[in-house]
Length: 72
Image 1 (cartoon, rainbow, N blue to C red):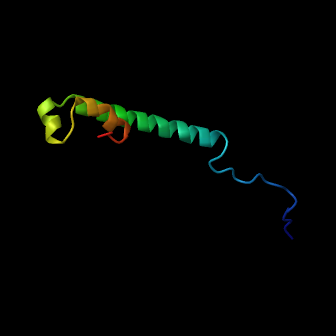
Image 2: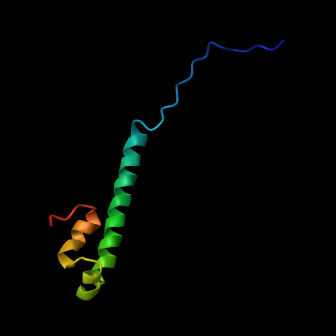
Image 3: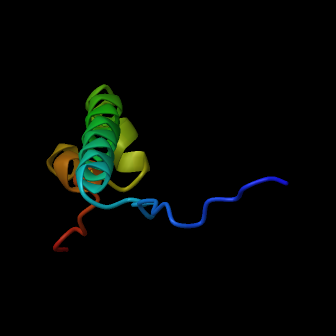
């Protein structure tokens, strides 16, 4: 006959809480920063004429890179 122990308590899985949540937020922030940096770099390499073709000027680069809306 086998013995099955049901008295041992186990910790419930924590999911994305505590340190995991902080790490997930940090990774998301790093990804957002990297995407903004790459967008800013790509748009900065365009000429004024090329930016005008897509409806932007050099002053709009930061607004577009950060994902904010223009005040126009």
